[in-house]
Image (cartoon, rainbow, N blue to C red; front, side):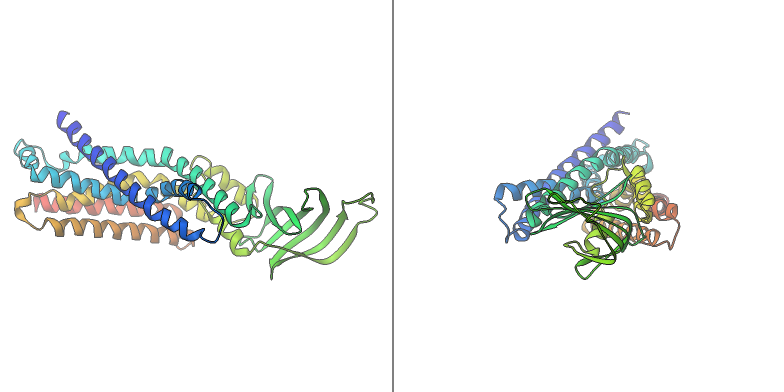
Length: 365
């Protein structure tokens, strides 16, 4: 157990060190990107730094498999150079037993990434999206899915408009059971519209079977109401913006994802993308475990044999390849080409078996 704790401590230290280094590098690059993105807006340096700190955790969360690979490489290259691996094997400890501690630490890191880092990233990403949208548009547009349906907000020089739809078709191109509530620039309501359906296109909503109630002045809204077979209402929203917002998963915590999936399905949207993401997040600890095994398969060798640089490069490239396969499988799962469970769980399982095969081949021939 002493040896296991020693390996675990060395691996955890390498992981924390690399995480700090990558966080600093990513933050620096992201600060430059935020400066370029908001160069045409009145955004101070303090605000850009705040946006950078909010956006960096999402990037760290995405490159976590790379950090795990590099931490494993640092661990075993260090053990090989100090001949501690030779002593460990001379004491009768096999390579697979020496991997128990790093694998357990990787599983713990994966579990913390899913249960703790994921919700933190969701909160920071949501805040980043809100602030960046406010800086660009002044908070004139927003999209939200809740148990009551789909809520949208648009705005411009004529004021704000809040839109509620009971449901939508699968690609968000048509909303059904729609209510528009228009507000004047000074903040008071000025018109209410209810329609059977609304389709967005060419910078305007096309409302069918619409009824309009004026809410300004001393007029009787019902007596002054009008009906229209087709009514066009100008819009600052676009279909791409709505779909992008509905497809964004960074702002939803894994703890809230089951409820979010139910809300999407109740609103008429396809939730397959969210279901695949949810299953892939649950499988993430296994994928990080696979990254440890992959890196160890190439670096658990004494440095006197040479080829250390080639071995490290091979481990990193194989890790990137497995990450690409995992992402490709998720895309196939989102498109319905393969089952959801297969898309989320097969890549980590295949990576683990591949790494174990490489380890057994290197150890036993």
